[in-house]
Length: 178
Image (cartoon, rainbow, N blue to C red; front, side):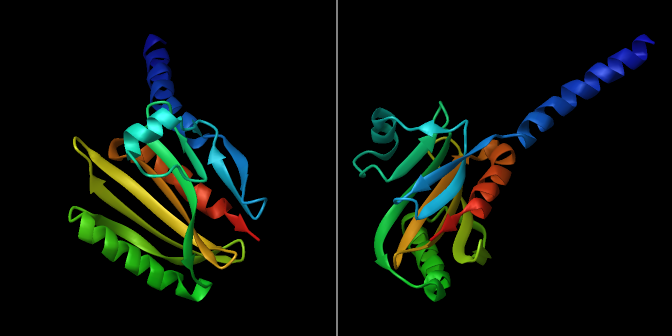
């Protein structure tokens, strides 16, 4: 009987991390006067100005930026001044990858493309880069709002990728634009 109890305890200890992983809670976020809607993990909260300055130095703070309490998981959304149509999203994706490679020779593209989500085309690509002391998983996705590109970036330290990539995919598939 003790042997069965021990097996039950070990099974629960192994499964609990997976059960909690599968249940990351999401909340709806609206941007740009309701023109954009997507789900964002409730575990991510508004990034402070201090954390933004520390992580991104002098870059202007975007329209939307949330992070976990340690700054190891981030979701950013911002408008660009880049005019484009849905038919140009594949070209824009390729251009972005080439520009990143110029500045980041360590960039390793995992996959990418253009897909239709909730009736609108969304371009995306996933890649890994090297930070000072560890690798970073990045997921860029973008769509057209009012004839301009709206860019989202999701990133986390690579060791957290197994816990967060599915949630990042859920953010993308929840994206709705008017």
